Image (cartoon, rainbow, N blue to C red; front, side):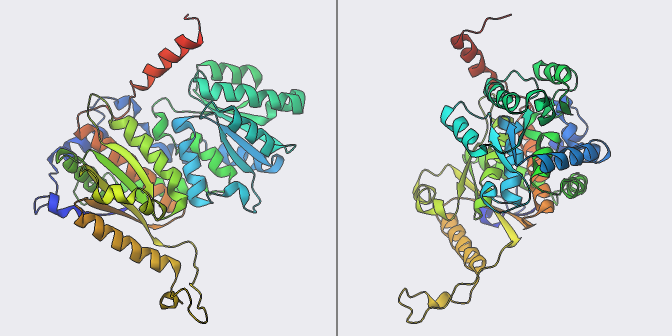
Length: 428
């Protein structure tokens, strides 16, 4: 389970800590399904449902892709790709497609409209065998729909009638453009659950199939997530999700309107991107909401660090740490000590990084930036599951505390309406 340390923000709280009265009400609203958006709370039981349902089919499909393809193209936008991308970066490598491995490369397309990005991916795939996983609830979202048209055409040109064996659709169970295409063409299908919104769908086939293709043990992820969801139903301020949700809402009321999520692992970058979508879409509505931003330490200490330290005091900072490093590397001794670094010789990089993080936290706290620390035992399947469940739970609680529906995103539709009108689509 994620551990929450609020010591770095204690000057902003009463001695007893953040007020928990609204958190208790929010928890009851969420679990009793009495609040707005209750029809989209299926993610609470999602790990158990997949373990008892689609797991074997997911594992079988992933094994088939690993056997007959050297590349998988995942086409989706927002929650249809961010969770899978986060998992592969965190658990395999941010350089996954460049490292030696016995699993296919995984390319993420359909999250933009850059011709250069699409052409580059086509060139990277080259003559290799590949499979396409199109992920869309409706199939009508422009960015993934256009990318799918391109890559489906490439499959048909390369494989002819057998192209249909290399398309997997993750979509609605019974309706929509993509569902109807998949049924008509006989593509293998997985379901985006009706009661789970896109940004909460990482532990469904949306995220699990690409993860399994990349060699991540999804059964281990789901088993850990099932335990985590059970533990996060604790009705007490000992619940880490209560601590985090309550603290960030208290700091928001104190004028801290921007939350910066930081981590000292480059592999965490897309986890932060997923976090930004989760909290941004869930909380940013009705004129309220904490703005979610992210930084990558140590690099951003030498760019954004100045703003964080000395800029406007509207920031709060949340730092994700891992107890146990995945890799070890000792700092070498050098004869002559010309760079004056022998005082660090023999120490592990992870040890130095931990010391730096302590120094940064002390500086930022002194600079009036409240700090919250989230600690996970290890960067592995259990750690990933813990983070996903913790953030999903904290986000839903935090949104209910602020009085908004955590599970809709009405503002997203505004640009789509304008876009289709300008592109000349005829309204039906």
